[in-house]
Image (cartoon, rainbow, N blue to C red; front, side):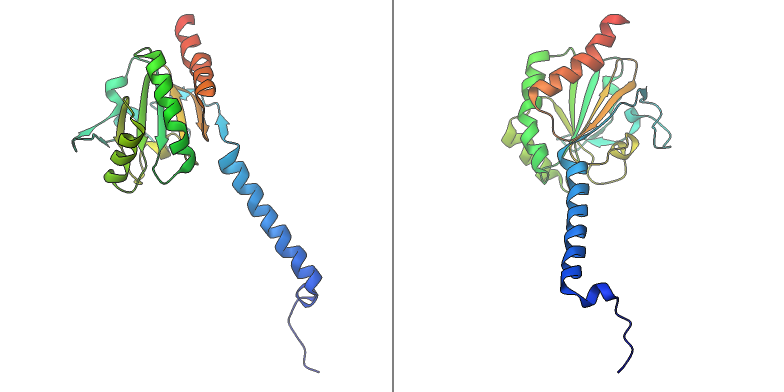
Length: 196
């Protein structure tokens, strides 16, 4: 009889099935926690300093306009802003965009709603914006290291709430519907504007 280096767990098909089942369950739990339930991390830090150790400001990162020219978010300094990171390849992103448009139409210029595409191509970004009929400003960042990492974005979509003083009030990873987005804007941006 030759010695074997196989684990006793691998010799019993019942044990092997149990291990595979446990591994699959662990992967499913991680996926659910990361993408379905969303991550709500109240940060309340300056948009000029990240919690991730990056230096600079969210207002400094280059973004492409639909016409191909480059801009930054500096044009929104001094007013409350919601920055939504999205991509055409992300089903929850596509699902929430009409709700962001509805909130934009309802609040007008009181709060800037800004979309930042993390798509791989500008054509995917522009096609999605056109098909949904977005009227608020959207820009292209692509998959480069940029403002998404600066705000510690973990999953798509990610939405960042920044007050008029440039302080990040909340970062939320996961899809938002119209009611949830409106409530978060009222809670994190508009209530602080009337108090100050």
